[in-house]
Length: 308
Image (cartoon, rainbow, N blue to C red):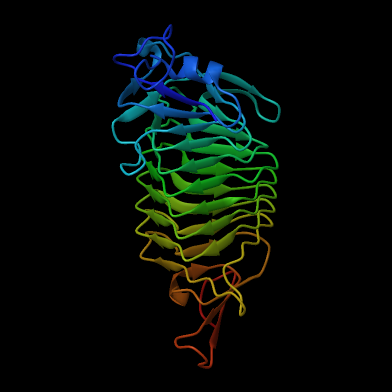
């Protein structure tokens, strides 16, 4: 196991990279890192002016650790560079995560037009206790067939999306806050991640689910978004709760509909806090007020949105 240290203010890329002689740039530390290496970042700004060259590529099995208790406060990675994606052509990104890499306790910003903070391509890395903010397109984009874990992070003031998921991505999105962005999350194609214990609040819209996506939603708070809380399109069929595993989601007080099923699949949800008068599209809402109590079934007409 190798441990490296980086300090953008006092470090030197010609030093040893140990705790007493840290590197100046994360780029240098990454060039020395192999699977099992942990890189500790000191407070400061990591950008072109400090010597970074973007995109920064975090190799497989490498762990970057900043300020986890502060969710990246004081440790800003800001920059952009071109990455040629096998599935999405040329992209402007800050960080590329490879398999089993970890990014923990940093703030990431990409202010370039159509800029993405962290890019994940058919890999299974972890992002935890970070802040993704002021990205011109999205904080995190994941495509392909990986199983990323995105945990306990803040997605704030990103213009397009907090997280955008496409392809056949599964994995887990848990314990995050999405606020003051475009869509909090966008889940498309055949993606089916577990989305659990997140707060998706005060965005333009909360959650977009499109194409044949089948995400699993559990114990999320989706409220006070300017538009709809949850929008389904095309053949999307999210799991919003079953008799065996109730959803436990609270979806309320959104400016449009709390749930708008604009797609072609008839859906059922069980065990959520949802007002049937705030739902549009073909949706069977099954509520259970107390354990073992008889459930009430409500049907919402796909054309009118009226109760029947």
